[in-house]
Image (cartoon, rainbow, N blue to C red; front, side, top):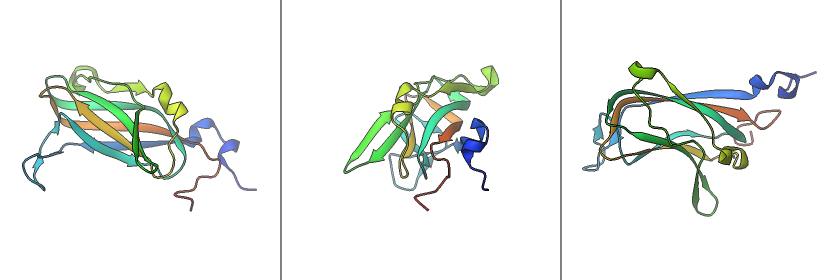
Length: 152
């Protein structure tokens, strides 16, 4: 008899994704990258491969300039693009000051679960702010007993 997720602890349904960001596309020319996570930028963190739910996450920021503000959004294409904020607005302190800043997903994440093909995005806001390096950790929970990727 096969073992499926409902036979195991709930922690078996979770996946952890880590993304390091340290470059922002330049507004001057295509192909030129600025060596910082700059303000007013959007970064793709992951593309969902199966029905999942964002549970929580953490930001670890290094080399801060001023106070950047980060949010996590889900972007879905359904005849057009829709975006919904699923992570709180976080103004992290430098890792050397207080370590990683962990956060819980907003209520929208539970009512707006990810479907295969959805993307989780990070937006960077604030006036003239930046991080030299931003480590993003995301914890998602599978919503299927038997995991399939893009229906396969």
